[in-house]
Length: 403
Image (cartoon, rainbow, N blue to C red):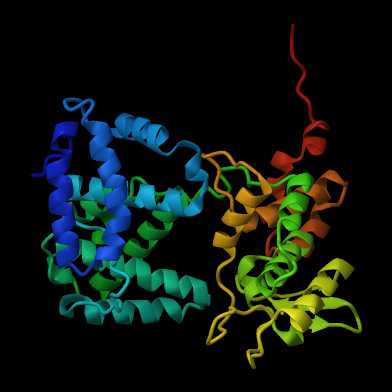
């Protein structure tokens, strides 16, 4: 039975053992260095209070003290949370939960037949491409966890191992937990029905409700959006591309996956429309093409885009000129350049432009069905969350206070 509560004085011993095991499992020294910086800061911070419990309260104090507002930068937030998560899992379960980037996601012998046949059966249910990718990643992580716990074959998995896996999901969002447990439940049932396990372990897996939209969508004000757009250097090719990309996001509210997938055939210049099959919903969406967006795209195509036979409008500016894929990192840089500070507890990303457009439309009296159609929502319930952040709508339903 492993120790799950340690003192800060013991951290260095666990961190050293964790680093050694990560190297043995194929993590590159470069990847390790990113985490080592966080762990070095952690041990230095812990040295000032060497005999207190290393618990959630201590970790919160450490993160706030050492990183503070820098957590609004997506890479910093990921690196810190991932480093602490790796350490937590190693201390609590004695395993490394994760996948070395160079790993080809090939299942071990004791899991290969089950995982591939189960995965194929799930895909036949009609999963979207993005969901398929998540499914394989989720299954691969599960199989690594089970092997680390001593079950070299799925038939050796016990109720206790299932419980440990469920506990390991604790730091994640309810959405991730719900989806992971649903996949595990279906996997266990499939294994029992097809002779991969003598017992149906799915009965031990709790149902966790996926509470959608727990947090208010992060939005930019109209002034902030204009500051971001004005921060691009439109005199160079990269600046022309990024300006056109972000202007498209701000004016049309397209998802980043759809902007990256825009092709030359997506735009009807004569009709001034833009049409695309949405990556998420697989539904056709046709929107008017605003003049400023159209001219920004034209400027990029004529004066910024490298010569390439790629079918995509927005591409990388280095050979082999593949599909553009760097939007979030660009956004972080432009927020700094525009002088916009974001709260450390609010995740800001490309989706914020989409939320901002919906909120502005609602504030201007546009009906929910029209907003839903503009954003390409498959269900109007996805649009209703914006009612929670519209001050105009909230003023229409004040509560009477008894004095």
